Image 1: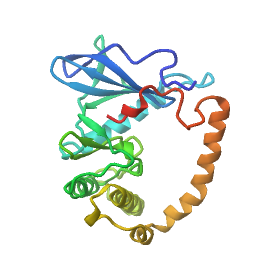
Image 2: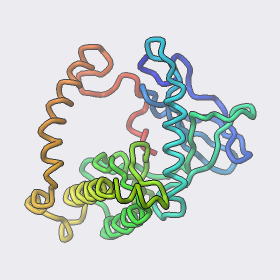
Image 3: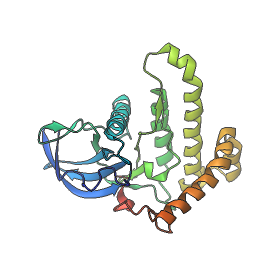
Image 4: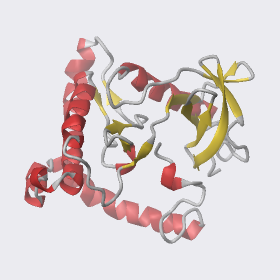
Length: 262
C-alpha cells in the first residue's frame, strides 16, 4: 500500500530515445512513485515510475498515468529553459511504453544543502530561470523545498519536480480571465520562497533580512502556515505511530533519500 509499485522494484532496464538504459540505483520508493538513476553507454537519466499499485483494492493505475502525463506536459512546456533539465521522451520496457513513467536528463550535482552558501551568480541566474518559467505561464508551487533546487558542479541552479505545478491552458483567453488571478498568486508564492532561499544561502552582501522576508510574506501564506504546520505535526506523529516513518520523520519506504533529488 505504501509503495507505488507494490512489491516490485523499478525495471532493471528501460529504453529511452532508442537507447538501452540500465538501472544503477534506486533513489526513492514511496507511496507516490519510485525513482531511479539509469545509465546508457553515453549518458545518465532520472526515471520516475508513478503509482500503479491498487489501494485497498481500488485501481490506481489511472493516477500513475495522470501524474506522468501532467509532469511530462510541464517539461514539454518549459523545454529549452536554461536550468530546467530536459525531458528524454518516452520510457519503454521490451518495446512497450510505460505510460506511468517519465524520464529527464541527470544533473551532476546536489540538492541545495541546509547550510550551503552559493556563489554570487547563483541567485541572479535563478531569478532569470524563474522569470522565464513564469513568462511561459507556469507556477512551480513547490519551490519552498530545497530538494527541488539543484546545484550543479559549476555552481549553477537547476529547478526540478513540476508534478504539482500550475499553469493555464495555452492560448485560452477564457482560462486566463477565470484563473489568471490564481496563477499570479502562485507565482508570487514562488518569488517569496526564492527570497527565503536567498536569505539563507546567498553571499552576505546580497542577502535579504528576516524583516524583508516578513514584509514580503503574502497574507495567504500566513493563513496557510497557521493551519498547515499543526496538521503536518499531527500527520507526522501518526505516520511514526504506524511505523511508516522513523521518529526522525524519515519515511521508511525511501531508499537513498539523500540523493533522491538528482
